[in-house]
Amino acid sequence: MFERHLRPESGKTQEGDERLAALLQEWKGVEPQSNFESCVWRRIRAASALEQRPLPALTVLRDWFVPRTAWANAMAAAAGIIVGVGLALSTPAMRDGHQTNEPLLHSQTLTGSYLTMVTGGTR
Amino acid sequence: MRCCPNGEMMSIEPEHNDWSLVEQIKAGDNQAFDELMDRYKRPILSFVYRMIGDAVEAEDVAQDVFVRAYRSICTSRVHETAGQFSTWLFQVARNAALDCLRRRKRHPTQSLTALDDSGENVPGTGRTAHEESAVKEIGEQIAAAVALLPEDQRTAFVLAEYNDLAHAEIAEIMKCSVKSVESRLYRAKQFLSDKLGDLLHYGILARK
Image (cartoon, rainbow over all chains, first blue to last red; front, side, top):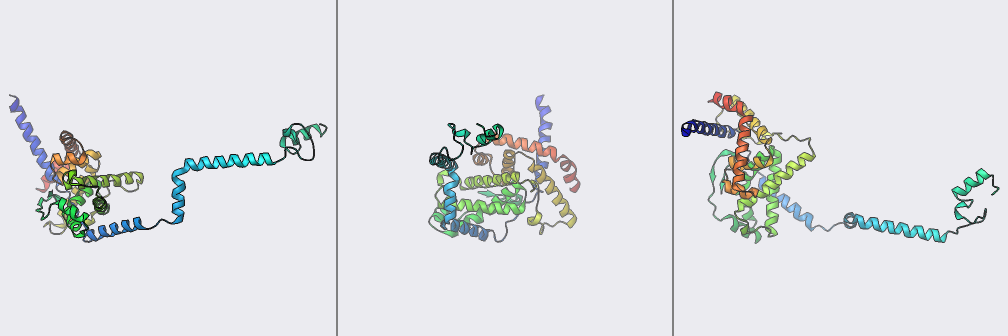
Protein backbone atom coordinates (compact mmCIF):
# COMPACT_ATOMS: atom_id res chain seq x y z
CA MET A 1 0.00 0.00 0.00
CA PHE A 2 2.81 2.33 0.96
CA GLU A 3 4.71 1.41 -2.17
CA ARG A 4 1.78 2.44 -4.27
CA HIS A 5 1.94 5.89 -2.67
CA LEU A 6 5.67 6.16 -2.77
CA ARG A 7 6.26 4.97 -6.28
CA PRO A 8 4.73 7.93 -8.10
CA GLU A 9 6.38 10.30 -5.63
CA SER A 10 9.85 8.83 -6.13
CA GLY A 11 9.24 8.83 -9.86
CA LYS A 12 8.35 12.50 -9.62
CA THR A 13 11.50 13.21 -7.60
CA GLN A 14 13.65 11.39 -10.10
CA GLU A 15 12.06 13.31 -12.94
CA GLY A 16 12.62 16.55 -11.02
CA ASP A 17 16.25 15.65 -10.44
CA GLU A 18 16.74 14.91 -14.12
CA ARG A 19 15.15 18.20 -15.10
CA LEU A 20 17.30 20.07 -12.59
CA ALA A 21 20.43 18.29 -13.85
CA ALA A 22 19.54 19.19 -17.44
CA LEU A 23 18.94 22.80 -16.46
CA LEU A 24 22.20 23.04 -14.53
CA GLN A 25 24.17 21.96 -17.57
CA GLU A 26 23.03 25.18 -19.23
CA TRP A 27 25.54 27.04 -17.07
CA LYS A 28 28.57 26.83 -19.29
CA GLY A 29 32.08 26.79 -17.92
CA VAL A 30 35.07 28.76 -19.07
CA GLU A 31 38.09 27.73 -21.08
CA PRO A 32 41.58 28.58 -19.83
CA GLN A 33 43.35 31.34 -21.73
CA SER A 34 45.92 30.17 -24.27
CA ASN A 35 48.72 31.67 -22.18
CA PHE A 36 47.61 29.96 -18.95
CA GLU A 37 50.81 27.91 -18.53
CA SER A 38 53.13 30.80 -19.34
CA CYS A 39 51.30 33.01 -16.83
CA VAL A 40 51.74 30.36 -14.14
CA TRP A 41 55.46 30.04 -14.91
CA ARG A 42 55.86 33.82 -14.85
CA ARG A 43 54.23 33.95 -11.41
CA ILE A 44 56.39 31.09 -10.14
CA ARG A 45 59.55 32.85 -11.34
CA ALA A 46 58.41 36.16 -9.83
CA ALA A 47 57.72 34.49 -6.49
CA SER A 48 61.12 32.76 -6.45
CA ALA A 49 62.89 35.99 -7.42
CA LEU A 50 61.12 37.80 -4.60
CA GLU A 51 62.24 35.12 -2.15
CA GLN A 52 65.88 35.23 -3.25
CA ARG A 53 66.16 39.04 -3.22
CA PRO A 54 68.06 40.32 -0.17
CA LEU A 55 65.92 42.44 2.09
CA PRO A 56 66.68 46.16 2.08
CA ALA A 57 68.11 47.57 5.31
CA LEU A 58 64.96 49.59 6.00
CA THR A 59 62.78 46.48 5.71
CA VAL A 60 65.06 44.59 8.07
CA LEU A 61 64.87 47.45 10.54
CA ARG A 62 61.07 47.65 10.20
CA ASP A 63 60.71 43.89 10.57
CA TRP A 64 62.83 44.06 13.68
CA PHE A 65 60.55 46.66 15.22
CA VAL A 66 57.08 45.72 13.98
CA PRO A 67 56.69 42.31 15.61
CA ARG A 68 58.27 43.59 18.79
CA THR A 69 55.90 46.43 19.58
CA ALA A 70 55.53 45.34 23.21
CA TRP A 71 59.29 45.22 23.61
CA ALA A 72 59.68 48.59 21.89
CA ASN A 73 57.02 50.14 24.16
CA ALA A 74 58.71 48.76 27.26
CA MET A 75 62.07 50.12 26.09
CA ALA A 76 60.56 53.54 25.39
CA ALA A 77 58.93 53.62 28.83
CA ALA A 78 62.21 52.60 30.50
CA ALA A 79 64.10 55.25 28.55
CA GLY A 80 61.50 57.85 29.57
CA ILE A 81 61.85 56.95 33.25
CA ILE A 82 65.66 57.07 33.11
CA VAL A 83 65.64 60.48 31.41
CA GLY A 84 63.02 61.82 33.84
CA VAL A 85 64.87 60.63 36.94
CA GLY A 86 68.16 61.93 35.55
CA LEU A 87 66.70 65.38 34.90
CA ALA A 88 65.06 65.47 38.32
CA LEU A 89 68.30 64.61 40.03
CA SER A 90 70.43 67.02 38.03
CA THR A 91 68.07 70.01 38.47
CA PRO A 92 68.60 71.89 41.78
CA ALA A 93 65.44 71.93 43.84
CA MET A 94 65.79 75.63 44.65
CA ARG A 95 67.31 78.37 42.64
CA ASP A 96 67.93 81.95 43.45
CA GLY A 97 64.82 83.96 44.16
CA HIS A 98 62.09 83.19 46.60
CA GLN A 99 63.33 80.61 49.11
CA THR A 100 60.97 78.15 50.65
CA ASN A 101 61.26 74.87 52.44
CA GLU A 102 58.71 73.33 50.11
CA PRO A 103 60.06 72.82 46.62
CA LEU A 104 56.54 72.99 45.17
CA LEU A 105 56.04 76.49 46.53
CA HIS A 106 59.19 77.82 44.85
CA SER A 107 58.45 81.04 42.99
CA GLN A 108 59.31 79.44 39.69
CA THR A 109 56.68 76.75 40.04
CA LEU A 110 53.08 77.27 39.04
CA THR A 111 51.86 76.87 42.58
CA GLY A 112 54.49 79.33 43.82
CA SER A 113 53.54 81.90 41.19
CA TYR A 114 49.88 81.58 42.13
CA LEU A 115 50.67 82.03 45.81
CA THR A 116 52.80 85.08 45.05
CA MET A 117 49.96 86.53 43.02
CA VAL A 118 47.20 85.99 45.60
CA THR A 119 49.25 86.96 48.64
CA GLY A 120 50.91 89.89 46.93
CA GLY A 121 54.33 88.42 47.57
CA THR A 122 54.07 88.83 51.32
CA ARG A 123 54.65 85.27 52.14
CA MET B 1 40.90 11.02 -12.87
CA ARG B 2 37.75 12.06 -14.58
CA CYS B 3 37.39 15.66 -15.60
CA CYS B 4 34.23 17.40 -16.50
CA PRO B 5 34.98 20.77 -18.00
CA ASN B 6 31.89 22.48 -19.36
CA GLY B 7 29.77 19.56 -18.31
CA GLU B 8 31.46 17.15 -20.67
CA MET B 9 32.95 13.92 -19.50
CA MET B 10 36.57 13.45 -20.33
CA SER B 11 38.65 10.49 -19.41
CA ILE B 12 42.36 10.95 -19.03
CA GLU B 13 44.66 8.05 -19.63
CA PRO B 14 47.88 9.39 -18.25
CA GLU B 15 51.16 8.13 -19.60
CA HIS B 16 52.62 8.69 -16.15
CA ASN B 17 50.51 8.78 -13.04
CA ASP B 18 50.26 12.06 -11.19
CA TRP B 19 52.56 11.08 -8.35
CA SER B 20 55.35 10.00 -10.67
CA LEU B 21 55.04 13.41 -12.34
CA VAL B 22 55.30 15.00 -8.89
CA GLU B 23 58.54 13.08 -8.29
CA GLN B 24 59.86 14.30 -11.63
CA ILE B 25 59.00 17.89 -10.71
CA LYS B 26 60.85 17.48 -7.43
CA ALA B 27 63.84 16.31 -9.46
CA GLY B 28 63.68 19.56 -11.45
CA ASP B 29 61.69 18.44 -14.50
CA ASN B 30 59.55 21.43 -15.44
CA GLN B 31 57.93 19.61 -18.35
CA ALA B 32 56.35 17.26 -15.85
CA PHE B 33 54.66 20.26 -14.25
CA ASP B 34 53.46 21.39 -17.68
CA GLU B 35 51.86 17.98 -18.10
CA LEU B 36 50.16 18.24 -14.70
CA MET B 37 48.85 21.69 -15.62
CA ASP B 38 47.58 20.36 -18.91
CA ARG B 39 45.69 17.60 -17.10
CA TYR B 40 44.14 19.74 -14.41
CA LYS B 41 43.83 23.32 -15.62
CA ARG B 42 40.32 22.77 -17.04
CA PRO B 43 38.74 20.98 -14.06
CA ILE B 44 40.40 23.37 -11.62
CA LEU B 45 39.34 26.45 -13.58
CA SER B 46 35.83 25.05 -13.96
CA PHE B 47 35.60 24.43 -10.20
CA VAL B 48 36.99 27.84 -9.23
CA TYR B 49 34.77 29.65 -11.75
CA ARG B 50 31.64 28.03 -10.36
CA MET B 51 32.73 28.74 -6.82
CA ILE B 52 33.39 32.44 -7.34
CA GLY B 53 31.27 33.20 -10.42
CA ASP B 54 33.70 35.49 -12.23
CA ALA B 55 35.66 34.26 -15.25
CA VAL B 56 38.53 36.75 -15.06
CA GLU B 57 39.03 36.28 -11.33
CA ALA B 58 38.69 32.51 -11.73
CA GLU B 59 41.55 32.45 -14.24
CA ASP B 60 43.71 34.38 -11.78
CA VAL B 61 42.78 32.11 -8.87
CA ALA B 62 43.32 28.95 -10.95
CA GLN B 63 46.81 30.17 -11.88
CA ASP B 64 47.44 30.84 -8.21
CA VAL B 65 46.38 27.26 -7.43
CA PHE B 66 49.14 25.95 -9.70
CA VAL B 67 51.69 28.35 -8.25
CA ARG B 68 50.79 27.12 -4.74
CA ALA B 69 50.93 23.52 -5.96
CA TYR B 70 54.35 23.96 -7.56
CA ARG B 71 55.79 25.56 -4.46
CA SER B 72 54.36 22.85 -2.23
CA ILE B 73 55.77 20.14 -4.49
CA CYS B 74 59.21 21.77 -4.61
CA THR B 75 59.34 22.20 -0.86
CA SER B 76 58.30 18.53 -0.48
CA ARG B 77 55.20 19.47 1.46
CA VAL B 78 53.12 17.05 -0.59
CA HIS B 79 53.67 13.29 -0.68
CA GLU B 80 51.97 10.31 -2.21
CA THR B 81 50.57 9.49 1.22
CA ALA B 82 48.26 12.47 0.76
CA GLY B 83 45.97 10.15 -1.26
CA GLN B 84 44.98 11.00 -4.80
CA PHE B 85 46.85 13.93 -6.29
CA SER B 86 43.60 15.34 -7.71
CA THR B 87 42.06 15.34 -4.22
CA TRP B 88 44.97 17.32 -2.86
CA LEU B 89 44.87 19.75 -5.82
CA PHE B 90 41.13 20.33 -5.35
CA GLN B 91 41.79 21.05 -1.67
CA VAL B 92 44.31 23.69 -2.74
CA ALA B 93 41.79 25.06 -5.24
CA ARG B 94 39.04 25.18 -2.62
CA ASN B 95 41.28 27.11 -0.23
CA ALA B 96 42.27 29.52 -2.97
CA ALA B 97 38.62 30.07 -3.94
CA LEU B 98 37.68 30.66 -0.30
CA ASP B 99 40.54 33.15 0.06
CA CYS B 100 39.17 34.97 -2.96
CA LEU B 101 35.65 35.04 -1.50
CA ARG B 102 37.03 36.34 1.82
CA ARG B 103 38.90 39.10 -0.01
CA ARG B 104 35.63 40.01 -1.71
CA LYS B 105 33.87 40.19 1.63
CA ARG B 106 36.47 42.66 2.81
CA HIS B 107 36.09 44.69 -0.39
CA PRO B 108 32.37 44.37 -1.14
CA THR B 109 32.49 46.62 -4.22
CA GLN B 110 32.93 43.47 -6.28
CA SER B 111 29.68 41.57 -6.69
CA LEU B 112 29.46 37.95 -5.61
CA THR B 113 27.47 37.12 -8.67
CA ALA B 114 29.40 39.33 -11.05
CA LEU B 115 29.60 37.26 -14.17
CA ASP B 116 32.08 37.86 -16.87
CA ASP B 117 31.13 36.11 -20.04
CA SER B 118 34.43 36.70 -21.81
CA GLY B 119 35.25 33.03 -21.60
CA GLU B 120 31.86 31.63 -22.51
CA ASN B 121 31.92 28.91 -25.11
CA VAL B 122 29.66 30.56 -27.64
CA PRO B 123 31.08 29.37 -30.95
CA GLY B 124 30.48 25.90 -32.21
CA THR B 125 27.27 25.28 -30.28
CA GLY B 126 25.00 25.18 -33.31
CA ARG B 127 22.57 27.63 -31.70
CA THR B 128 21.11 30.80 -33.11
CA ALA B 129 22.05 34.14 -31.58
CA HIS B 130 18.65 34.37 -29.90
CA GLU B 131 18.96 30.90 -28.40
CA GLU B 132 22.48 31.70 -27.35
CA SER B 133 21.40 34.82 -25.47
CA ALA B 134 18.61 32.83 -23.79
CA VAL B 135 21.10 30.17 -22.73
CA LYS B 136 23.42 32.87 -21.40
CA GLU B 137 20.57 34.36 -19.39
CA ILE B 138 19.70 30.94 -17.96
CA GLY B 139 23.36 30.42 -17.08
CA GLU B 140 23.43 33.75 -15.25
CA GLN B 141 20.34 32.82 -13.26
CA ILE B 142 21.84 29.47 -12.30
CA ALA B 143 25.11 31.19 -11.32
CA ALA B 144 23.22 33.70 -9.18
CA ALA B 145 21.30 30.89 -7.43
CA VAL B 146 24.47 28.83 -6.85
CA ALA B 147 26.19 31.93 -5.42
CA LEU B 148 23.48 32.06 -2.75
CA LEU B 149 24.33 28.59 -1.47
CA PRO B 150 26.37 28.36 1.73
CA GLU B 151 30.03 27.65 0.94
CA ASP B 152 30.00 24.00 2.06
CA GLN B 153 26.91 23.18 0.02
CA ARG B 154 28.27 25.06 -2.98
CA THR B 155 31.60 23.20 -2.86
CA ALA B 156 29.91 19.80 -2.63
CA PHE B 157 27.40 20.71 -5.32
CA VAL B 158 29.95 22.08 -7.81
CA LEU B 159 32.32 19.14 -7.34
CA ALA B 160 29.52 16.63 -7.79
CA GLU B 161 27.53 18.31 -10.53
CA TYR B 162 30.18 20.02 -12.65
CA ASN B 163 33.40 18.14 -11.84
CA ASP B 164 31.66 14.79 -11.63
CA LEU B 165 33.58 13.66 -8.57
CA ALA B 166 32.47 10.71 -6.45
CA HIS B 167 30.92 11.48 -3.08
CA ALA B 168 33.85 9.75 -1.33
CA GLU B 169 36.36 11.98 -3.09
CA ILE B 170 34.32 15.10 -2.28
CA ALA B 171 34.25 13.98 1.36
CA GLU B 172 38.03 13.70 1.29
CA ILE B 173 38.43 17.14 -0.28
CA MET B 174 36.05 18.70 2.23
CA LYS B 175 37.42 16.63 5.12
CA CYS B 176 33.99 15.40 6.18
CA SER B 177 31.95 12.20 6.00
CA VAL B 178 30.21 10.89 2.89
CA LYS B 179 26.90 11.31 4.76
CA SER B 180 27.64 15.01 5.23
CA VAL B 181 28.37 15.36 1.53
CA GLU B 182 25.10 13.67 0.64
CA SER B 183 23.18 15.84 3.04
CA ARG B 184 24.79 18.99 1.64
CA LEU B 185 24.03 17.89 -1.89
CA TYR B 186 20.42 17.16 -0.99
CA ARG B 187 19.97 20.58 0.62
CA ALA B 188 21.73 22.33 -2.26
CA LYS B 189 19.48 20.66 -4.82
CA GLN B 190 16.37 21.47 -2.80
CA PHE B 191 17.42 25.10 -2.60
CA LEU B 192 18.21 25.29 -6.31
CA SER B 193 14.95 23.60 -7.26
CA ASP B 194 13.10 26.27 -5.28
CA LYS B 195 15.15 29.14 -6.65
CA LEU B 196 15.09 27.95 -10.23
CA GLY B 197 11.51 26.70 -10.08
CA ASP B 198 10.25 28.96 -12.88
CA LEU B 199 13.10 28.06 -15.17
CA LEU B 200 12.62 24.42 -14.34
CA HIS B 201 8.95 24.43 -15.23
CA TYR B 202 8.82 26.88 -18.10
CA GLY B 203 12.30 27.73 -19.31
CA ILE B 204 13.53 24.32 -20.32
CA LEU B 205 10.12 23.01 -21.32
CA ALA B 206 9.49 26.02 -23.51
CA ARG B 207 12.74 25.47 -25.32
CA LYS B 208 12.10 21.79 -25.92
